[in-house]
Length: 286
Ligand code: PAF
Image 1 (spheres, protein in one colour):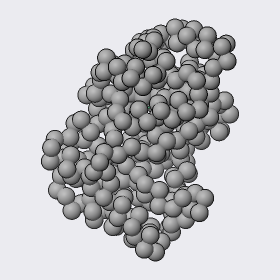
Image 2 (cartoon, protein in one colour):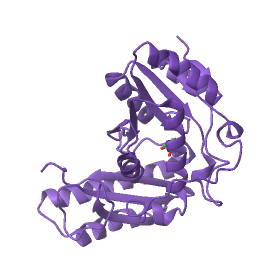
Image 3 (cartoon, protein in one colour):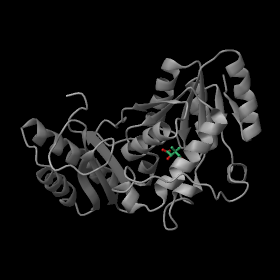
Image 4 (cartoon, helix red, strand yellow):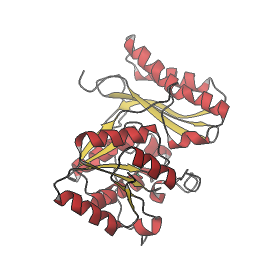
């Protein structure tokens, strides 16, 4: 069955109003489209605990910097609709920019702390753009549960914090990263990699695995782990490292030693494509 596909906020609200009245729990997956296995796993996770799954497809200009790849970001709504249909998604909300931002928004969600470092430092304004659109999408969809991927670990932490700080009535679920067979994390941006770059890109996973291996062997100094990750990445000429860091995976504050909840995170340019990845080094409940 093809999912209903709506483009306006009012149609979306109307369609979901009926579902809610019928007592169905609404699950939500926010995307920027060009869906891959990672997104499909979020849809499957939403399906597990809700009755009606909504996917939004919107490339949000607010979260791209002036020199970033907003224009080039891959888009293929027909393909996305087909994948959603195969996965049994009930509703796809795919607004255009004039629907989401009929007037340039002067109200923004801003956050400090969680968003100060790593992606926040590399991409000024990025998280304000993400949190503003996610909050707006939450107001439109009003989901019972929303599923985001651990692949964007800092985004996940920021959304959890926003929902907690602002008492947003939604259960946020963070689903594990889906990887290709060779370990590369699924990402819409992987399509930009040339053959040799695709090969080099597996080093992000390799660097994280190296850190994890060192922790398993007893290393606790985060400085040592960061150097080890940096070494794996910079051994390849095609890779330009942006950061290789160990932080607390919820607060995104730096750690001197590995403690429960420690997360290794890397960002690098492979050719002209910017990729990120992360891995828990010690689970929260240890
Ligand atoms: O993770 C993404 O694809 C985006 O940041 C999101 C959450 C859909 C907001 O635009």
